[in-house]
Length: 252
Ligand SMILES: Nc1ncnc2c1ncn2[C@@H]1O[C@H](COP(=O)(O)OP(=O)(O)OP(=O)(O)O)[C@@H](O)[C@H]1O
Ligand SMILES: [Mg+2]
Image (cartoon, rainbow, N blue to C red; front, side, top):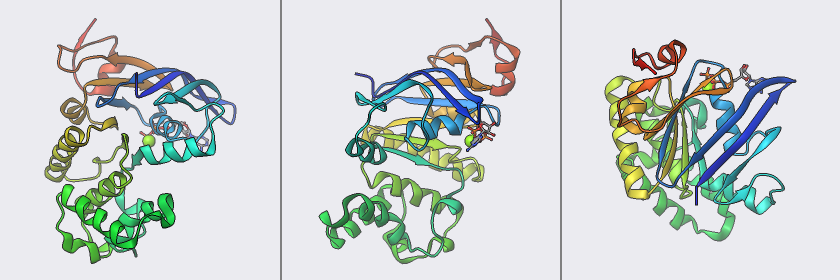
């Protein structure tokens, strides 16, 4: 069974078509890249997948759960099992929180009193280690961290709910190239060790090429091209796609 299936999805904002004819299916442990110009609908698609925004036509199913006629319990499950990580880590955490507070917050929200404080702290510490940060960071305030360190904390925060899919919306874009490479290595190794499925939104072909199995190119809300296997020689349909990829691939 496919992990995530997006079928003929259409989305309007104020009568304007933002996404249409979107068909994507993702298997367990697969990593699919999404590229496209600014405004092509990448983040909107991410919001539909995590159930933050509704769509107008078509359907999405996650682990066989249809987003149509969904129950509250199923919504909670989707919110736990599909995590979204944004570009700017500084905008997505409360700067006054300590790393421990950032990491334990999702557990407090999703599990309320089912997990003891000690257990939450334990899990947070283990995850810090997993993302390559020393446990001493637990007591530091988010604002004291570098961009790369904070993005690692955001990755740990996403992992604490034991998700199955992680969507990265330009998550490494703002970081300097060396830090970016280290985070990409971390993402590749986490995918293997935790059997994660990734949706990787990026403006950079190189990072998609490194991390992803296949690549979808959006243009004005539609899929302009799907590169099914990034390991095979790449041929694209038209000049516009080449421009989005920033590479002079052969045209079909
Ligand atoms: N809440 C909203 N209300 C109305 N229009 C919106 C809303 N959110 C996004 N849009 C519009 O939808 C289109 C797609 O936006 P989206 O943010 O998905 O693009 P994107 O591909 O993520 O762009 P970027 O690369 O700049 O992040 C844009 O035209 C945008 O103005
Ligand atoms: Mg975006």
